[in-house]
Length: 149
Length: 421
Image (cartoon, rainbow over all chains, first blue to last red; front, side):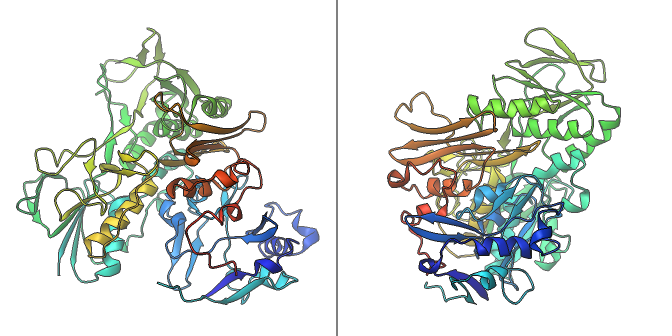
C-alpha cells in the first residue's frame, strides 16, 4: 500500500501542495475558475511551521483510526482492501466527532458545507496531486515501510 | 470453539462483535437486544426527527452484517438476570442461554423524574429509534413542545422538533445549557445561537407537574407559571442499565465496575459502553462516560480480550462534539474547576463577536480538559495531550494561538514519527 512521506528538511512551505490539492478536488480543476465554484474546494493538506521547520499535515490513514471509532454516523470506514480511511459524505451529519478524535489534527471542519476535509490520496489517480506539485520533491509517494513491532 | 454472548447491539456490542471476529471466525456469537431494530446510529435520532437523516442512513451496519459475521441475533428479547455461577442469562420470556464469555453492553436509559403526570401519553424519553418515530408521528398535531432538561439530549430533541416547525421551549433546572459539558461563559455562546434560531430557553426552573386529563395540556413550573404544550420530551440524563446484574456478585457502583481488560470481578464477564464504569484518565478515577466514541473503544478492547488477545484499556476521557445551527461545540475532560480544585491553571480566549471560545484547564502543566466553540480545528490534539498526560510547559504559549498544530507537539509525544523523514 502506498503512503505519503515528507522530507521535512526539503519543505519550503511554498504551499504548492495545498493549491494542487484544492484544485484536484474542485469541479473544474482550473485555478481561475475554482474560486467561482459554488462549493469552494479546500485543501486536504496544510503546511504548519514549528521551530524553523515546515511540516505538511494531512490524514495518515491510520490502521486503528480514532476518527472511525468516533464517527457516530458510520460515515468513516477503514477499507481493508484499499488500505485507507474512506468517507461517505451522504451519511455525514457534521457533528465533528472526527475532528475531535484525530490525534494529528489532520481532519479540518468545513463548517459552511458541514463536511470534514481529509486526504483521500486522490482516490483513483496513480499519484496524489500534492506529490506532483511539490517543486522540491519533499513529498514522497511510496510503499509503506514495515512497522517495527 | 467458545460461546460468546453479547447483551446489547449498539456501539459497544457491535465493536465487540468486530473485535471477536477479528481473531476468531469460528466460535458462536449470540447478540441479544431488547430493541426491535438492527444496530443503528443512536446519536442520529435527532437528525431523523429533524428530517435530515432518512431511515436508510440510520443503520450503523448494513443488514448483511450479522449474516456475514455469522451472528445469532436475537432482537426484541430482554435479559432480566445474569447468573454468573451457572454462566447463564435468563430472559424475560423465561428462556435461558449459556455462555463461556459474556459482554454486558446494555447501555443506559433516560432518567425520568418523579413528577405528577410524568406517565401521561405524550411524554417521551429520547433514546431510541422507537422514541423518535413516535415523536415524529405527533409532529403534525403538535404546536408546542416542552423539553425537560438542557443537556445534549434535550437540546438535540429541541433542535429536531424546531427544524420540523414545532415551537419548542426548553425548561432547564440550572442557570445554563449543557452544564455537564460547558462552563457558564461558553454556555452563553450556545444559548445565544439557540435563541436566535427560535428555541426558547427557560433557565433555573424545573417542571413540577404535567397537566391534562388524558392528553397533555401544559406543564407547571417551580414559579407556578403554566406553559401550554401537547408534547413533553425528557432529557434529564441517562443511567446505566444494571437491573439484570442487581443481586449478583458482579460489582456495581453507578455502572458495572470494570478493570484494565474491561473485565468485571467475574473473569469471564466483561462490560463496555454506557453501562460500564471504567477508569477515566482526566479524573484519575472510575467514572461512567456514556458517549458513543467511548462505547466503541471499550467494546473493541473488551472484544479483543474476550477472544484472547490481551489488550489493556488505557481509560476514557469525557468528550463530546456537537453542532447547533452552524456553531460547533467541543468539550473534553474536566471542563470546569470544582470547588476543591483551586490549583488549576486556566488558559482562555473568549471572543463573543466572532463566536470563538477556547479554554484549557491545566494541572501541573498537564491539560486535563478543554472547551472549544467556533474554531474547533486541532481539538483532537488537545484530546491527545489529555489522554497521554503530556507535560506541555515548553509549548504553553503556543496552545491558544491560531497556528498551533501537530508539529508543535512532535517533541513531546512518545509515538515514533514515521511520516516525517
